[in-house]
Image (tube, protein in one colour):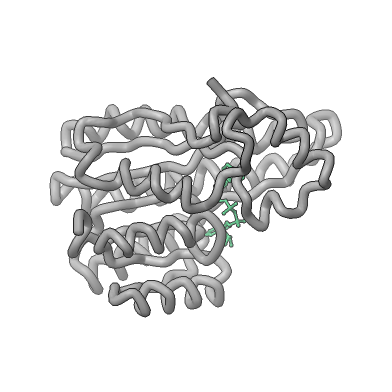
Amino acid sequence: MPLTDQVALVTGSGRGIGQAIALALAAQGANLVINDVDAASAQVTAGDIEARGRQALVSGANVVDEAQVEAMVEAVMERFGRLDILVNNAGLTRDGLLIRMKEDQWDLVLDVNLKGAFVCTKSAARPMMKARHGRIVNIASVAGITGNPGQANYSASKGGLIALTKTTALELAPRGITCNAVAPGFIETAMTQQLAEEVREGWMKRIPLARAGTAEDVAAAVCFLAGPASTYVTGQVLVVDGGMVM
Ligand code: NAI
């Protein structure tokens, strides 16, 4: 298996897309660090990983808190002695029209989606630089490429994440570390199941492949960018959206 003995840390992997990414990396042979502020859901994902014969370490660190993230990376090094793959997946939305958006809606989304990726990348980069090897994959969004009404905060955070991906790729390339982003489109998760039927139908009309994406569709792209088939790919944004944005 391509990722045998490697260690992958996936933020926000208690549920949804992060959980699917963790399970897919485990299926490729990796041991996993399951991080989520919802520690109970992280335990469930970790149980699924162990049931597949891989090791799992659970961390309830908040990705925005540098001290908690550094302690998490230290715990990873103590337990496994290596960190090969970081997937910055933790994210959230607080939608609203720009003219009504409150400062705290803006701050929370920028904090978790953008600062969280910066904090985790900074901590994870140290052991990766020492090993002169590492893969970082950031989960962005098509909203970070096109913008999206009602998501000034979210689209700015994901656009920023794409820029962070490129700078990280440039700074860490000399150390043998790649950094890429996956930009999902409309993916079937708890986040999107809450949308009204007419909003869902509006999205469907814009998708050439005529279906919503699955968390597994996103996970497959992450496995490519975390695995041996993409050693010469860095600073790129892989859009996984059924052709919606092209
Ligand atoms: P979700 O809400 O189902 O899962 C996100 C997980 O992140 C939750 O378990 C949550 O507890 C955790 N989390 C939130 N804040 C955290 C923090 N500060 N520290 C650690 N963990 C934290 O969301 P979903 O749909 O699985 O999304 C995952 C990623 O994919 C997000 O970055 C999202 O922006 C992105 N995305 C999702 C799309 C969709 O259609 N669902 C489309 C494009 C991008």
